[in-house]
Length: 237
Length: 237
DNA sequence: GCGCACTACGTACGCCGTACGTAACTACGA
DNA sequence: TCGTAGTTACGTACGGCGTACGTAGTGCGC
Image (tube, rainbow over all chains, first blue to last red):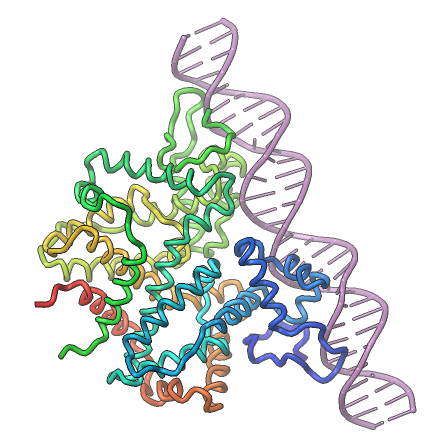
């Protein structure tokens, strides 16, 4: 059993080691680490079964003894970096704690730019995701709302952080597979945008540009976004 | 020129028709429509250059006369369905209007389940995206904040809608490529989650389950989420 | 009316995920 | 103690992908 079949299973429920046979040469963590290393260096597209196997130093198909499908490899990766979340003793100030969580998540995603793309596809309850979730709930102990509402808060915070970082990194990640530079790409798109706005068909959009002359302060935008999310959950009083 | 070279360009700036040569057999819209049809029917993975070409009824490589890279095909698709946004005369109640926008976007993404995956990768200023954006800004005319803030509102609304729908559709879209059913997949994951919670290592997570006995009302969750986003931008007074 | 920019598209290359067959190995049941 | 069943390891092979490139046909602008 647990062999070549194709029964539904979660990779986390699969035992790392069974009784029989030669003992596995790698741990799940080794594999995840190798994949993360590749993705950090060359983008998510650099993560192929062949590359990961080579990085580990084994044959391609040997990998399938540990990871039944490529999707599961992705789950391993997400869990691995989720473990980088530093969990602390809640301070009693839930707002400050959650702001910290948001910033930490953003830092995590900037360190691993492929993460947003995987986050929106996997509805992860991996071990480290559970630890992270429990920690968030602990931080929210002082907030007097139902657990359901707390879950909604965490979900929305994650959603906002993920999408903001995804947008921030979109150009950079996109350029990775293109034969020209990030600056060229942006320049060309800005030029097109400018030409469209110049037609006068979008007066309010045009106003956006004349209004804010300087470049946007991404840091401030992010900070405001987090604040507003938390505001939405703060009981009015 | 405009031939085989690899200079940076936006597909929208590329003219649909140039002077010389035989006239193109397809319009950009035809191509986008074909790709959207395939994606709606078979998921985003069904959209390959070969399949789209076949759907159009031309050779694979002919497609490259219209679409220089696959990524551009994606942009065409996003723009095409963005055109499905129904734009109305703003009512004067910006809150109601933006709620409507949110619901419409969600409906759009449910009709085209592949959309969330593309939305988080493309920082689109396609023609229809511009029309949509201008419309949102028009709806926000009564709101007395800067255009910068209005843009942040639209961005956050889109972020929240996108991530909520993405999560809602994650299992279904994932199951598309798996040899077993959606129900089996969910059952197995719920079972694992239950086993983990049962260990007692996640007391607050456990409380979430005991608290809300019934199934979650996704509709209500979404409605609350939209409301809270808009709350965050409503001037206190 | 010549030439060039364009359309059309077949072939081919190097990737990808992974099904499958085979050989070596080890813990367990007899 | 020993056979055997369940593993690990991994080479080969298949069908699909994006797309570079070569070639042939077409019709506008000079």
